Image 1 (tube, rainbow, N blue to C red):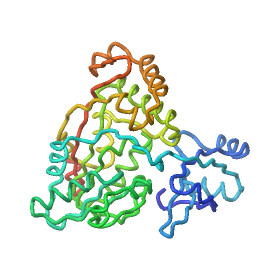
Image 2: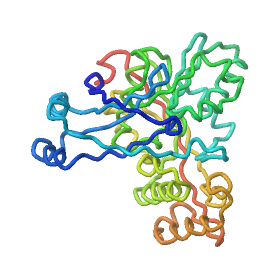
Image 3: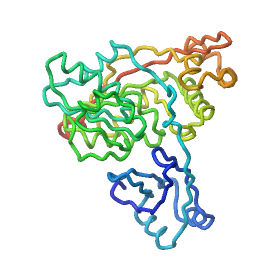
Length: 351
């Protein structure tokens, strides 16, 4: 499917460029057509890609024969472009910054060596790459860091030193990376996998597998709820935050995997020897979000707190050490680092 695309001309106004989010709808004729010939084993996906020359191109992904029929019958696709909030100049969302000892464990687990090329995928503002470059220098190792994120505004806010030291800085979608196969010695995802819809998270891991050299490690660092109940509550909280802060494009995007789910997706993607490097606990506080995400709006904080109170159960309260002061609700969420490897040969993966 990666190489079977149909490209659709799309003209966007200047103020719409940067972070478009598409809501895909089909004409009535197209809906009737799809209902006749498609079943749950197929999927259609619409995306907008930023071309190297700065132009945007829309593409429809799906089974080649279905796309050919769409083209032949001239079936319409309508999309609405909205802002996703990442271009705001405010503090922005902070999921989990990470303690110094966790960053050190992460860097050590990568096994950095001279000439090592590392992909910092979904890099955000480059916190991880900044640390890795300092860590490598302190250990007398020279590495190359490639930073990749789908949001230009994140990359525009990189520390100037990172902009100078990075091997390259690329706007790219983790589900369709703009790199050749087997380019990187290591791939790192820090607090980024949950930004992708659950159904697309396997695509990200498959792309990580593709761009990794055989034997190279993939490290995933993220919040990983221990139970389905906490997972549902955490994802619901993020969706509510997205609605309150007008970041509509995150409404369907944020999904926090449990550890067992991550292990299964890693195995399905072809990785082997998955192991947990670290597990600490992150204090998720609504009061902290008042400044970083809610712009100091107390009314929105009250709405968020009420929303959580309506959904929490006693079992979740006990599991996450729930605390409710009236103004602040906090939960303790597992914060895990996992390491896995791309097998050197097929026998290693199947053995």
